[in-house]
Length: 237
Image (cartoon, rainbow, N blue to C red; front, side):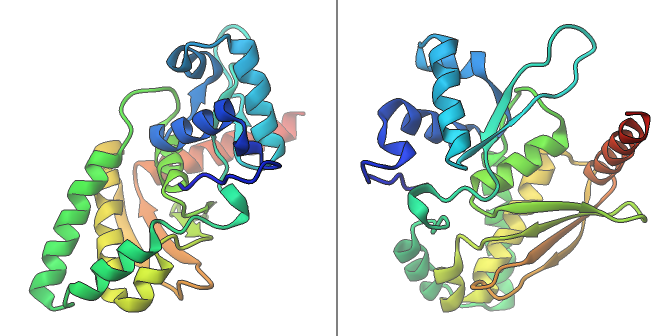
């Protein structure tokens, strides 16, 4: 994600900019201590910067339950983060030019999807805390899609994508760009949750967004179990 340079922006401070860039690259929930270790800084100072980023709507904090001890703060890029005040654009000019150069024939589209699948496997984060579904959600966030989760009674998990970071390229060649995105999604699933089935991939208008990634098994089962656990906790509270 391109970082803004306005002096009044939360990312104008170098340490905060580095933290935001690191979370974007890691593509997974990350603890305060890990971020502090990576930057060779004291956790208290890092926590202060992260709180400033959270107040600016750029990152979000989660405190997953643990069998023992106090919950740890886990940080990730916020689904609706707008660094610099604008939705992520994903190098619009380059993407638009590349999309224009690829003809959308059936054979070429199969090759595009296969390439996207390889890219998705490379993008998937390795290790780290958080469940497989957390990692998939974080990967979509880091790519700029601003996903919203939903689990239906039949057990299907749907990510509704609130932003299309490739919208300029999509306008040039929607079949190619959306096929690449579908391949990236499959590659992420290969690496993060290979037992999960991509049940549906529904492109929408890139300017209004709302594309759907529909999943069954694996991640969907995990999200449904979490929703049930949260509902039980609410009833017990």
